[in-house]
Image 1 (tube, rainbow, N blue to C red):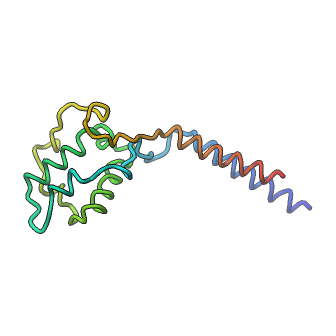
Image 2 (cartoon, rainbow, N blue to C red):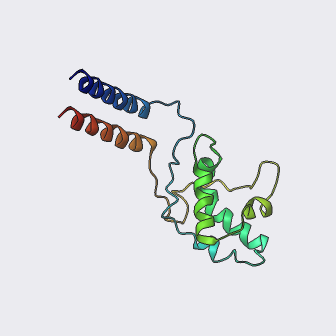
Image 3 (tube, helix red, strand yellow):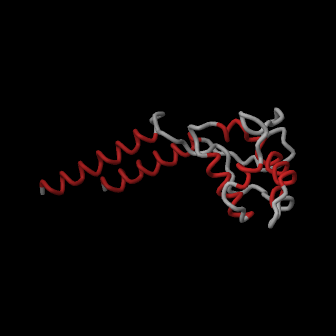
Length: 150
């Protein structure tokens, strides 16, 4: 009987820690607030084609796609850049490092005009917030605690 109580207490403690961790702001890398999964990548894939991958077309298309999200992509506290490049490479089947090697304008990287996703002509601005992710995690953990207590 004591073992069962100890098991329930330990499970509840772990779930409470999970809930508290979901509200912590000290996580290393947060989820990207931009949902790159469902974006339209044809602006890149239609202009940047192999086998030669012309730099002018590839870099121009890349800037048109990525510049509206420059603030999020340059934020090292999230995984936006990794996520975006994963989808670009998935849909375009580009060689590794293509855009990094071809698209260089200066010491600071590519120069983007001052636009935001809301002013961009692209309707790709499907965004999520870290708060909603934390809310789902907390709700899931609370549900598990409730089920465990039954």
